[in-house]
Image 1 (tube, helix red, strand yellow):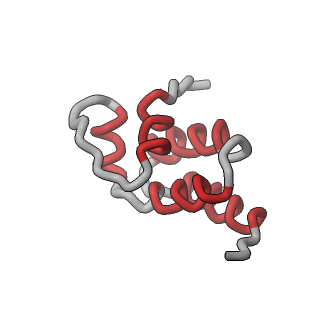
Image 2 (cartoon, helix red, strand yellow):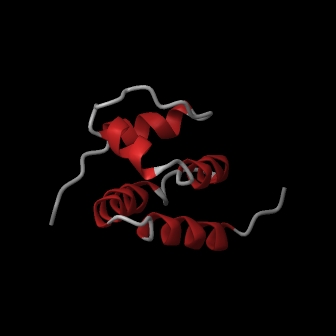
Length: 88
């Protein structure tokens, strides 16, 4: 499959910044910025799908309120779970 990586990264960055809530915008955008250039094409596609998960589910998972997040790519889930968000 031929994928325009730059276009994919732009879509991912945009989706991570415009979630609907300011808190999730900041959290997910920081997470994406940290990881977008170190993961391969397949993981970028998974990351794009990951960003389609509801904000409330991601928030609860990240804050250990609900540790059950079912997603097809455990690598992305692990990255997110271990991500340390620093408020600047």
